[in-house]
Image (cartoon, rainbow, N blue to C red):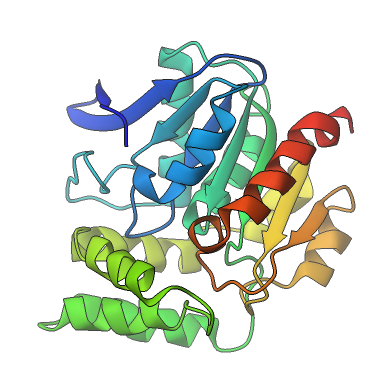
Length: 262
């Protein structure tokens, strides 16, 4: 990672990197219990032609982690505020997992800031027993064995071809994020954020990069927003942007070249 800078919002320091030049600017947003380093392959690739701002969300990485509710709306508002402070106009916001939900919410709520949004294997329109799964996960994270609970949950995200050393690094890094942050995000995303409404009201171009996981009901997503473009990586688990960055980067590059014309 590059040397980072801070912006302070209402007493909370938010870390970011800002490098490269060229339009459109791209804002990179990591997933839950991750940090901007999880988007490093995309930052290195894109900043050859674009201004790239990589953010540590509130509660993650080098940003402060105050005890508060961590809603999707609040995280998206932080990203929008950082864009305003840095004079980043009409950016393409690309996020992995949680970061994709933040990108979608920002695009739906503040379209003047967001030219397009990219979701990389984000949990979207999940049905079935998702609510019960999240409730159990949140309870476990808030218990005495939260670190093990988080690691066991993250192990489910890996594919059979993922590099074991990289998987170990992901698990070690995930443990850096406080349990009060992760538990609140999962709880709030499940109970207080309407992903279907965000999809339906979003008028910016959207790209969803599926990793072959059961994370999203993409047929319903297309019904709610027929303009969404779908891509899929081959032979990756959930962390496709790290496992096969060449695939993710190629689709990002093509979307930036032609997908924004829609």
